[in-house]
Length: 200
Image (cartoon, rainbow, N blue to C red; front, side, top):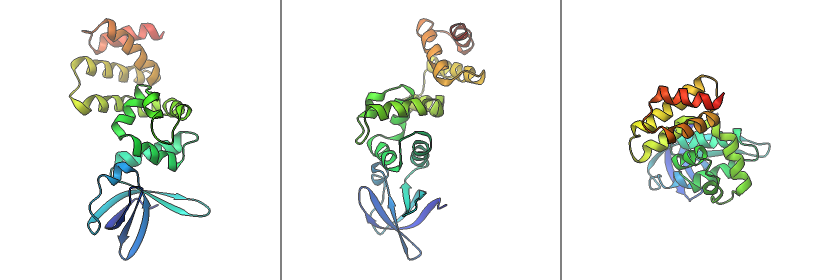
């Protein structure tokens, strides 16, 4: 498995690059999100990679950040009907943070707007990834623009506590959201107690 390429950027297009490493030029397919962060040709570059081995080809996919590669791998291994081409389309159409937030919020409309995806594929992505992305994604999304408020922290901690008790993330988040709307001043323990009543 090739984990990364550390070399000189020789050729650049929006969907692929050529990286020279010790005299060998590697053709690497990339998403637009990584293209925007590349240096000029002739400059040093490091790309994290994922190698796909097929009967007729070995294909390298490259990423500017671990988050991009992790999401790519999650999509191709965990979502039925999504291969490398669609996974690259997702990364090209929406940044990782926004995508995770859309999954957590079941925002299939935003995901369906990505070129190459449709409503059914967007619904399948949300259905199959929601539990896997989990509360960490919601926390990251909340932290992207500003630090989470005390209410947001209490709600996230309550959801984590319910997951630790064995409840699914989707059910836990729904239960906490419902009780937190009616009890805005409630702390984590009270939210857990109130949510448990609705989950029993």
